[in-house]
Structure formats: structure tokens, C-alpha cells
Length: 177
Image 1: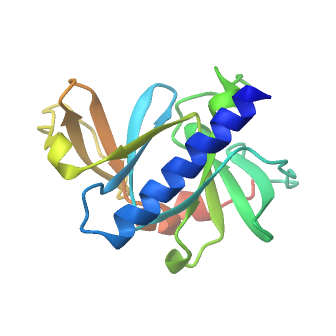
Image 2: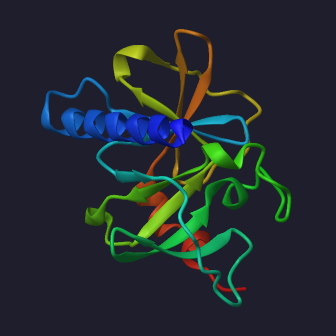
Image 3: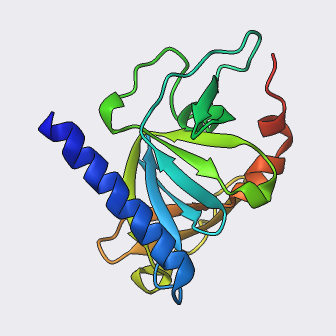
């Protein structure tokens, strides 16, 4: 019971910090999440709310990465398992720590009722905490939604994800098999 209360308090603090970041001069620009050990950055302008996992109703004939639909604050949202969509985990393979999984809804301005299921929420990051990571010589083609890579003061590499470009990506929009 104490763990649930602590988790709720953490979520409330993060939600308050995200709201404060939107209202004040931008100290934090990014929501940091993790999928299969990969650090990802979502723009605070493109992401909306963070939710603890809720019951998800599967959809028939959906892609393996389409978890289904969920009721988020009274609205129906499509739930995409970002780890599966990015090919970082195989379908049917268990999530390492399902208790830490979170749903991050996309900003309503993007005109898509969608939430991304991520493995872990890691907090907020500001541009002043990150530096641009040079592009590798042997990198192959990257999807349009993959932004630049950044490195933090601890040496961890973060991949920016453009949620608007992701929401318009052809594969992302093709939800049925």
C-alpha cells in the first residue's frame, strides 16, 4: 500500500513539474523515458499526461505493437507499445519490470488519441543538461521521427523522438495486420 502511495506521489510531482515547465521559461524541455534500456527524449510540447498502466482492451487484427485501447481520463486512446514498435523487444517477450511501465499520452494538438507504453519514466531533462552527440559514420538510414542524439553529464546517450513525426509515420498509422 505504501508503494502505491509513493508511486502516486511521484506521478503527481512529475505531472506538476511538467505543467510548471510548460508555464515557466523552459528549464526542462524533455520527458526522459526508457524502452529496453534505450534512453528516449520526448518534447514536453508534444507529450501530454503520464498514466500508470490501466486495463487495455486488445483489438482484433492489430499489429503486434498495438496493445489495444484504454480509457484515459474518460477518453478512449490507442495504446502503442513503443518498445515493440521500435523493434527493441520481440512480441510475447516479457517486459523486465512491468510495475515501472507507464503510458505517455500525446499532446491533443497532434490530433491523435494515442498513448505510448514505455518501460520506465526517468524524469525531466533540460537542454542545459544535454550536449549534441556526433553522428556515427556507419549509421544506416533513420526514420524521420528519430531526432538527434544527445549525451548527458553522466555519459548516457539519449535519442530524441519527434512525436509529431511519429504520429504521421506510415508504419505507425498502419495498425491492422
